[in-house]
Structure formats: C-alpha cells, structure tokens
Amino acid sequence: PARFAPASAGALVAGVLCGTGAVTAGLAAGDVITAADGHRVDSPTALTAVMAGRQPGAVVAVSWISTAGRHRTAQVRLVTATAL
Image 1 (cartoon, rainbow, N blue to C red):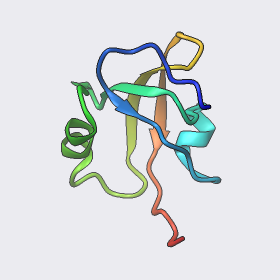
Image 2 (cartoon, one colour; image 1 turned 180 degrees about the vertical axis):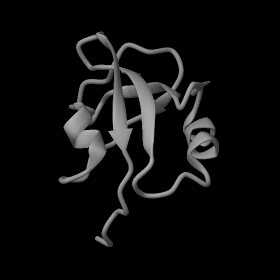
Image 3 (cartoon, rainbow, N blue to C red; image 1 turned 45 degrees about the vertical axis):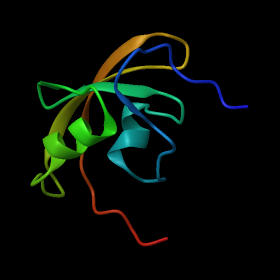
Image 4 (cartoon, one colour; image 1 turned 30 degrees about the horizontal axis):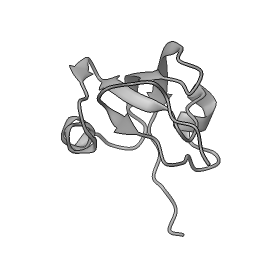
C-alpha cells in the first residue's frame, strides 16, 4: 500500500503529471499540501479555492509535508494539464 505523509490536514497528492511544475518542485504521490500562495490549505476544497483563477505560467509558492515527514516549500510554475 501507498505511504502517506504524516499530516493532520491538507490536500493529499494522489499523483503528479510528468512535465509539470509539481514534478520539478519534488511533489510526489502521498505528500500532503498544507499551504499555497500564502494561504493555509486544510482540505482539497481549500486548495481548489486558492488555485481558482490562477493561470498557466503563474508561479505559486507551495508548502507540503513529504511521505518522509519533511516540511518542504517550493515555487511551482503552473502549466495546462493535458487530457488523459
């Protein structure tokens, strides 16, 4: 089974798409996003609200807890996701 980051709240990363800013920043499945663009993220809905209206090319500070329990922050450049 997948291992999840030790976080009490946030938005669980189910996976990341190749070629995205999330991959470049080091986000991985099982990590938990706790803040984005200076706003606390307590749930997936909160992350969606923070990211609403952000356009491809924008750079957003994202903080998360890794599956190893490390607190990380990186600048993530947003891209348009391709259809699966």
